Length: 308
Image 1 (spheres, one colour):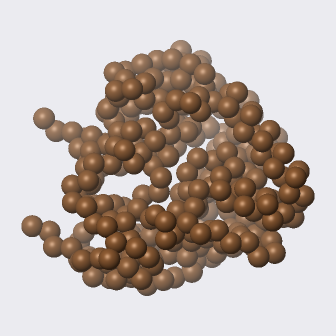
Image 2: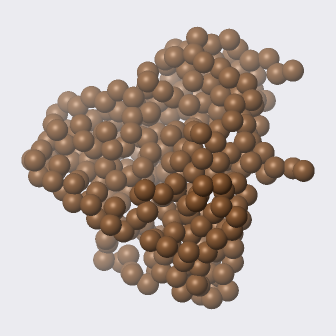
């Protein structure tokens, strides 16, 4: 029997995670912990036995939890971790704040973080994955990230500490990111909001935003992701090599590669995590056979498969 510290926040044993991911799949975590505040998280982390794994989880927008679940304490930040403040060109946001909310609040104050508007998920995930689009990345505007370490200490990290790369950063093992501070260029609030509206319209026209997906399934082979940069060549987009492999609209169980945008993996209603991951692996195999390109997953897959 695993003994855990008693927090002030909510601690739930054997908690199914399917309703916490955008794809609506996933087995149970050993425990789900929703801390009341930073002090509660610090104490819990400090008192948690060192051999118990910790998995920080955002809003589950870029995640497949396998059907057998997760042998860890999943830590999910909520209302006490979603504040957004703007001072001059500096924007500080809790890790649980949604990217879209941060972009809008920044625009209200004349700060351009518009690239965050169409990125699904929360600020913690944006920092961890160096999220970006339209030629801008989180790494370009981040000034500081604040974490609670596995030992329960609050520590500030610089962009250099995080070692940002394409869709990657280096967070200390077991650390939970609690807030981030950004510095964006100045802009006219009306123009910034107009730009975001146009970006949203363009996204909705080209992506299956009404379907149950987790955003882009695979990284673009060129190492860029819809950036619009001059070197982001059209024929190296993931959707193009998936199309060339004949996998647009391909299905496995309840999983499908979207007909609207073939780099979007969708749950048509009753998919299991195994269906989704299995279809993704079929796509990777076909793309390799037809083009010699090995697609890399952009969606994070965690946990154990279901055993008979």
